Length: 154
Image 1 (tube, rainbow, N blue to C red):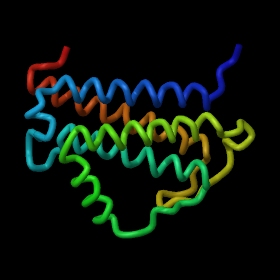
Image 2 (image 1 turned 120 degrees about the vertical axis):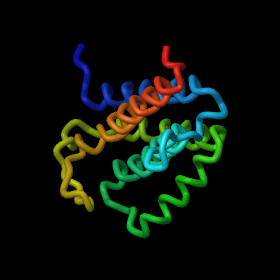
Image 3 (image 1 turned 90 degrees about the vertical axis):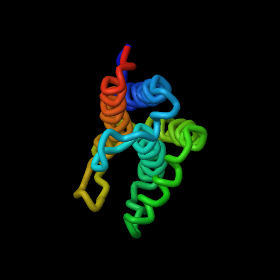
């Protein structure tokens, strides 16, 4: 039985989200919003990014149109607001992961090479459906690095 790219990425994205949550919860509660320097990001900020971008990527997969015009400062404001509590991040993360996993799994194989214009250049749908997995895996490493600084990495 062969596995499609879509089924692999749908499962891997869900697993990455679960691992991201576990990594964040490994941190002491009072350190989840902590950053080791003014130029670095907290675990909550990174998880908020993953939550928000999974939602917008879900819409991008479904519509195949870049619908995120606007002021980047508005995105940063919303992310900062969301990152104030784990409960808020978790609610958005759970909802958006379910949506993006469903969107990834629904992409027909023959559409994987379809191109979508984005501000970052033209991307194939195959590249776009890999983004949530890649982004969460990257931030999982960053959160685990924070755990290592705090001495709580298993």
